[in-house]
Image (cartoon, rainbow, N blue to C red; front, side, top):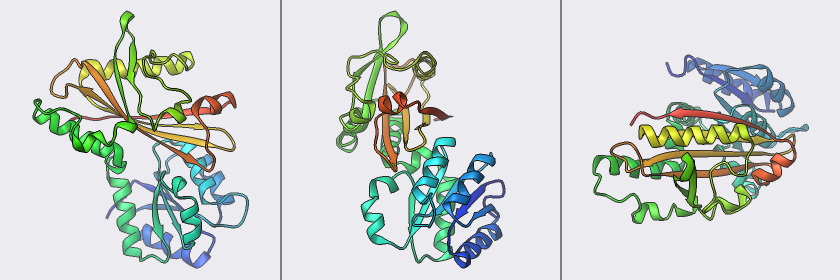
Length: 288
């Protein structure tokens, strides 16, 4: 049976649907927590340490809809998996950028399809679930197998808006050689030519410099999920640090594939930090 040590929080305001989904997932070997509303789910997220996936309806009565549940879940656990469900096509279309933070299972759904989506989300490495990160990682693996191949080719060139290139700088630090255009609004500025960590606090700077130093020295990729959260907004980001050349350390540069997701409200990192946002990180080291 799948998922014997994995916990799912199921959030659904229709009792029959919630009971059926919870019983089915429990029979499949998952530990299931059930919440009949978003308002009921929020305290469970706060009080339960080991939730791996949130399966939530989007449209629910009360103060917290499915996006608010996801916002709280990601704020507390940046690497958590989110699976939305809804029967309101118009609501989904309107909020498509928000749905990007998780996966989507339209209603009505078959239980077998629910199991397949849950299994995929929980058992697939995070860098394989994110399209941008997956494309970059697979290209890096090919470059590692054949060092004569350039990292940027026709396939990966389309990722350039989501890529930053970082190189060593004088004094033992690092600098952004270039910053992808899609990342600039969320960074709050174009970091091209700037030192890594220039615009963050000392703790965050030490964290970033330590990650880059490790990737440069070991030649091994690192995946990081981070969340910047205030009571009204959460900005989630996934990053994959890839050393180049890919075949042997030390690296000459690091390419960072990165995406951002805004859950319920759009704001940049600097704006959220000015509002007192908390930051949480999940770090996953990848053995090639």
